[in-house]
Length: 310
Image (cartoon, rainbow, N blue to C red; front, side, top):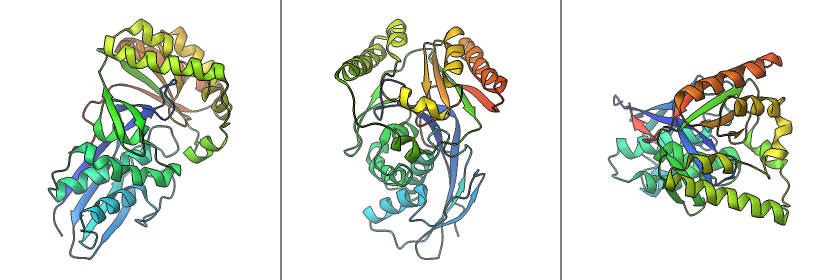
């Protein structure tokens, strides 16, 4: 067995209020790590999973990292070669922080590095998406693309891996709070109504367009006006006790905008600097805890690297 490599892929927050399934940001921390080694044994295997808050499958056909890695190995016709993965989960599942996406991103980046395939991260994205599909039931790049590529990502079409990095806004920080609740992505999608009114479509489309414009012009005031969700947030807020109270606290402390991170239950708040972010994160945590819900909070700048070798 070879000594192998260790890969890190960061957590992410997706949707960003106005961009359901089309916006995502990579966080500096936390993230998942995968140790990948060559072995004499035929095929890909997962030796163990460490740090998971629930039982995760080690079957490579059921695990997000396993499916992602296997899809890449099949593409390069090396699925019979011996590889072993050891997965270290550094964030809770069902948290809205893109845990499954991080594992998928780390897996394909690790295989590419170990085999010296020379593929770019963008070329690896379709294979990472196959892994993420196991968790969400369909192809969604809003977590896996930022986790793999880094930065703030706009997704035009997940199935075609048609994604774009948006320009960074200097000084932007995210305040994150994770209440000790679990909401699985599939559950959060099942409650959504397929019906959207014309007025909702107009407002949400304008907010998304404004968000993208704000990144190109570094217009913080415009960003603050468009981090609004009139479609998904009102439906999912019921899954997070005291959501609107926590959001109100974030806005009082100076957040540019606050909403549900991915499928939840984590919340994100965009802030213009780290000092405001620290105050916002603590305020959100305290509001949950005042309502008898344990929570953890942290702040993060945008992670521009994505998946890396440690």
